[in-house]
Image (cartoon, rainbow, N blue to C red; front, side, top):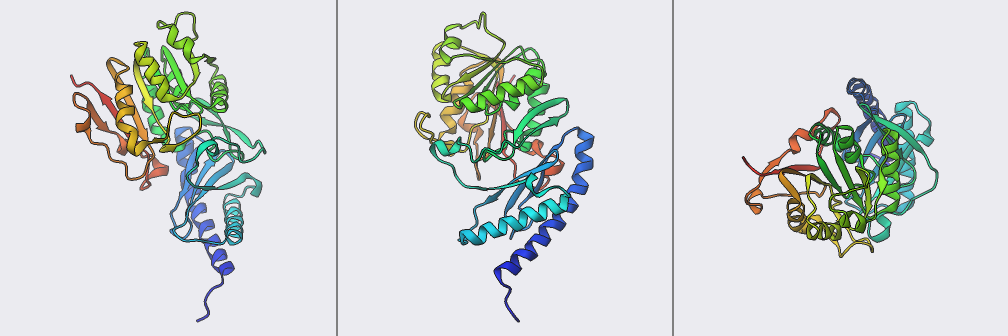
Length: 342
């Protein structure tokens, strides 16, 4: 029996992907319409030979090829990606230039934040009554993660009247959710100016105005007098936490959603969440008001959290509650809450 050539194997896989996408899209578009979102996980390595993750954004697709367990020639991989792009476009009956597939590997230093291009393919997407800007073409990530949908809803549901701190805020989707849930104040901290500018746009899309506040000014004004209740702070998170502790600042809820790994030159040392989560969580817990809550989300694979490492705190694993229709049977970020019992 004649062995298939690489191009023949690729063509077969393209047809497999096309059929899978058609089936998934028919099912998920009805569900998404019911819950009022136009962003959902379309495909997540459903077929082992096709290690792609694909998210649907309104009328376009952003996806990533995860590193294979074996080497493949660069030119062959490029051809393979082109065929998969075409298969996705055909399955969804959209133009091919609305499908964006990137290679996802561990990003180091400035590579974590640099632009990959300058096409500016942007969309405004919806989650219930909230709006967010996404960029599908120019960065590894789009600015909005569908796998945090349920967590955003939980944060919003508990936000009314509270002072909230969002760390590693990225484009501030959690912050916008909290503000629209009636939070009294929201502080959003990230070290990337680009992402904080993006965050300001997300607030504006929801008819909210967030103020850029220097870290030192926030620390100096312990009562936050004269500052906007929605604040964007450019700072290295661990340095900010140390300064906030010394200034005795407190919040009613803290959202900690860090990258699994970062060694950006602007960061204080290297962040490896598998290694560093204990002191990072402890710093956050020290900033909570009585009755406060820490929300902790982590994307690191094989992450395990032992509640006994945090005596005096009730630690709940909420990961199972994060599963929505588009993530059934898929790996989701771990999600935990920390509160004082009683």
